[in-house]
Length: 145
Image 1: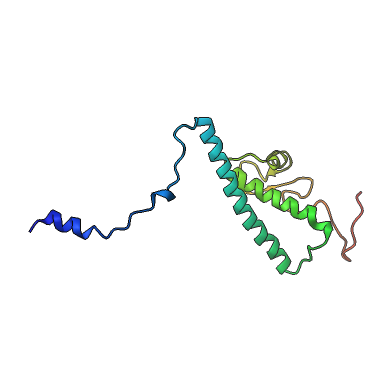
Image 2 (image 1 turned 90 degrees about the vertical axis):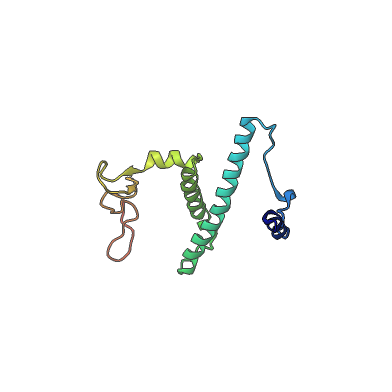
């Protein structure tokens, strides 16, 4: 009995992968063109993830009972989307205009310590106390001094 013949016969029922489905990069692409294609793919993938994450986040805010359907809230929602985009872009090694704003307006709490949070000194103190939007015991806005 020829063992090699038995092996070949048992492998005759293997389904070949359709080569028409294989995508390969053009071997004639320059490195710069290939880098541009990779950058576009990274942006596309990040934007697709951004759409999912922001839709879920904004939907959750609405499900928690906050009415964010008024036109006044469009800029607030856009800031949330841009902030999450900045987070995802920075994580992916991409640049976003929001990075400069964040880097200029936020600082680390207790630099050099193990506290891993940042704050905007115009909006709150290192102790997490708000510096804007303060109200009295009746909920009335306090006037700036």
